[in-house]
Length: 462
Image (cartoon, rainbow, N blue to C red):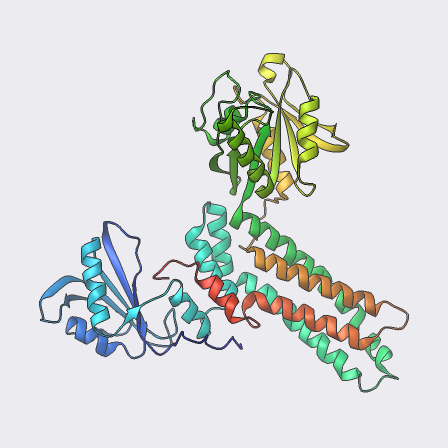
């Protein structure tokens, strides 16, 4: 599989080293080395030549022969290693001083300190992983829920990549079919009909739609949903925040304006990370500190995926609430929550209400008692578009964007083919653009600046 060439200034011939375990004290710490022909490197460090893929006990020695530590040495000769190069793993005692002494000794022996993500980048450049699998490594490490971790493993094992490769291969076959007919214009349409090109495009569009749905779910697992709680002062935003988080994160008092700054908490519902922001109450005020809090509220609103407008169930949707709804960004979904039904005596329910000229879902609940909370959680998942499937693979915003771009070009190709006199050059060009968009996901087509941006976000040692 063709990958992008090595970026300037990042040679693959040198030896790199990094501490691969988190900073701090632990029972075991690991220093990882990757480069060419590391058997001599291992001998200089330990006085032993470790056999391939077998752990041996050895002393890690300083330049004067004194022992820095003692532990296990693992040697993975190329190409059967994570990076595709020779890899050494040095398992020592997990104290920061010991690890840094071992790291310094490796640097003395000619290795250089690895850049963030450089081990995984080398695995990509050497064809051990494609780009989607490489990103799944970081996503697995960063997974905030069990569902996200399971989906990242599926992507790391190549499930997402195989789905993309199948689409790219089908597009390649279609392109070959179409371009083979361009030299015979008098026969091209009949030839394409005989080759079932029309139905193949339709089936390809359907398969791409299924992959897009799974990728959107995976993006939701990877990034979660950012929810901002808004409303007038003293409607129960902080109480709802505490109820959802299961902890007393926000101060709750009967006095309006208690919350002066945005408070954030992350929870999960059915494995979906929800990042909830409790904000200052939106109202006219002369209090300078409260004004700053309100300005930060509007900033949080602009960055959110969903707005929860809280109302006091006793007063309902007031003119002030409609004014808040009117100021919300048009693209921002909103959900109305009628709080304090423990004071009205009504039962929890979900309904639809006209909110400033647009229909909006309305949940009635009590943040104080927890009544109706399950209805709110279900509504949040519904708005997020979550389906409780086991076959979701982790995906990133760039993956979803690439799929959307590919789908757009495929739809353009399909529309061209369905015209009375299709321009096959335009049809072929849209197939090419769709193929390139999807190939960006796995790195078959990629720019060096994209690779730099992706791997720079990895932790050092991975």
